[in-house]
Image 1 (cartoon, rainbow, N blue to C red):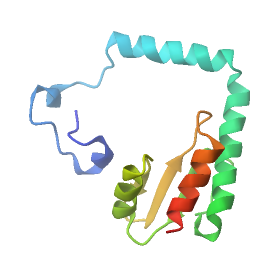
Image 2 (cartoon, one colour):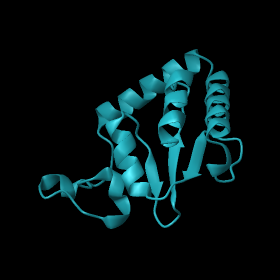
Image 3 (cartoon, one colour):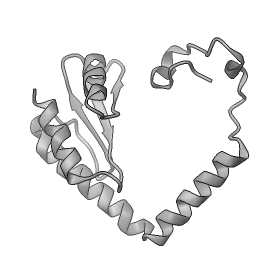
Image 4 (spheres, rainbow, N blue to C red):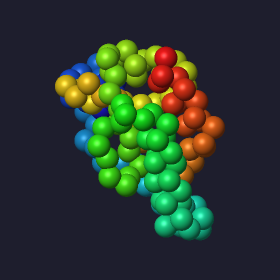
Length: 128
């Protein structure tokens, strides 16, 4: 029901009836989610999760000392001078990352669908 889902902390609601959404997912969204889980489980959920974590580790390694402390997860946060501008710039390059308000960082969420080539490109773009 937010006008811009990337700015959830600012709570700008849609100007139309969508602002009245109660948050329950429609049945077809539930069906899609269950179908997606079936696909992930058929590919080996544990293996897919391990792949995502390994890819995130690779991205963190490419970003070097700018990376904020992290555990073994699929999230990689790194320091930038202007987080909101970096999110906009990288969105223009086809990457969906988010800034962490007040932290001076941006964060990428890596999944098993991510490719090494795309993550290498992201790391290259962040060095500019």
